[in-house]
Length: 315
Image (cartoon, rainbow, N blue to C red; front, top):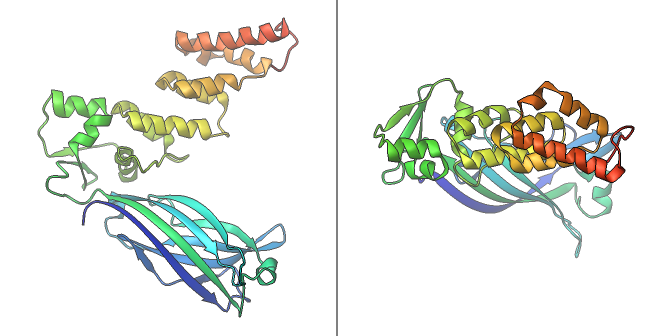
């Protein structure tokens, strides 16, 4: 089996005896997509005293090499209407599985009291269909003419291709091309298995594993190994992170030259007091001149709009 798998499947189940369904739920049999195993679970969830049908997709594998592979699932889940000419209810989810979680889905897929009235429950049963498209890469596979280098982390080997690394990383280009590094196994220390797996995954365009628990470490690795795609993924994550203070985003943007993040952060400064606090902060004096210039231009925008700085709170 090749280490990369792209596989699509559509499956359908009838879940019976669902009128008394509760939060314990009913699980489907295990189904196999590519090299991975999954289950569907249907159950009920209460939200603000409203009862909902909940549907979850569970990873059910026992792969002994789990720490060496990644997968992405693009899944559309349908609740099938059992009335003639009725409309199905469908919802789509993008799953990036990397051992951090094993279940994904919708705790409020459909209001429970409407199932029977609208034709989704008939003869005490519901029908669930899933359209399942999976992309998968296995770093445990050493394939002749495809993998030509491996990295050893905590006694676990990850096989990959020098060309893929060189295209996206100045560090690896210098190591393998300019310095003609010919070792087949490279040992990497001071990094956890999952962090290194997500780092390698960034070289494969289908997978973006940057999230709250790892973005800081992945930014460090992107900078250390000069990986353009990983830096882009990290910048995109920071831009979407609405809970992070703009001051923190400015620090990342300044340090790693995240231009789009810089523009977004500065454009969000519409409060005079906030701009003043940033300009007076210790971090401001550590910023690059180009960053200071952009912030000060924002101040000038403020003044040009209002004719004065004092007494103004909002742009």
